[in-house]
Amino acid sequence: MDKKEMKEILFDALAEKEKNMEEYKKVMMKILPEYMETTPEERLNKHFEKFDDDTKSFIMQFEQEQPEYIDFNNPDKSIMTIIYDFIYGDKPNLTKKEKKFLKNFDNILSLIQTCQYALGIKEDSGVGITHFGLDKTLFDSDTLHVENEDIIITDPCYIGHNRGYDLDHIHHSTIYGDWGCNVVNEDTGEMLGTFCADAGEVGIFKLEEVKKKYPKYNYIESYPHTVTVIKNFTGDVTIKVGFDKKHKDFYCYVEGKGSINFKSYQNRF
Image 1 (cartoon, rainbow, N blue to C red):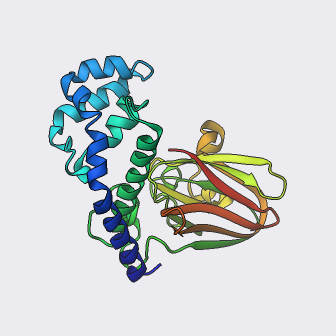
Image 2: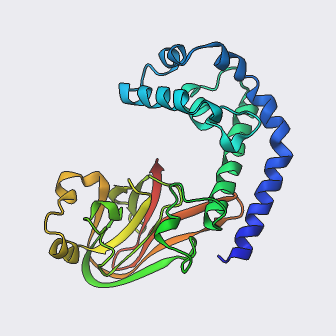
């Protein structure tokens, strides 16, 4: 995807945002009174009973240190994700239509943000742009060919001090930041494993090379949820990225074609 296409997506999303701003304010005003009339402690006690102390402390600190981010007129600089996805997880007093509207509006804001990062309009904030530089677009797919190798799918940050960048591999931004995925055999439906990210990236590595370069690597045994192992694979593994025009969203997934046909499916953040 070149910059021209990216700009077209951005301009369309900005127009969609502008068209829906008044409705956004109207819906959010149904939440605002209750939010502003209670203290952070009261809100946490009421809505955060199921969360641990670390989560509560994070929200408390965020609210106290950055009160200017509570700005309903400027959703790009608000903490609405925290407010209605966490504190108001049940989105009280909203109809199904309004809940759906908020979800769609969130997608528009995320789309704008991702395009702005990719075009260099804003600094990187979790989508991995800084790992590529200007010589590589965020939305180029990458392919690694292997012959009868054990390969691993994981975030490069788990590999070692240099993230395995010096190995024969491919890696890419997840676009979504930190996530979790399942890997499925596309021919049989069998679950092959799971992997996640803590640095917003996904990488494909040859296991033998990883063990040789980083002998202390033990994530397969100690943290199996972070890495999927595909044994004795011959074929091509591709990290596919792009834009789904129908759903107006970017996508990123891993796909293997060869002795085993597999694909990753995001199932959590």
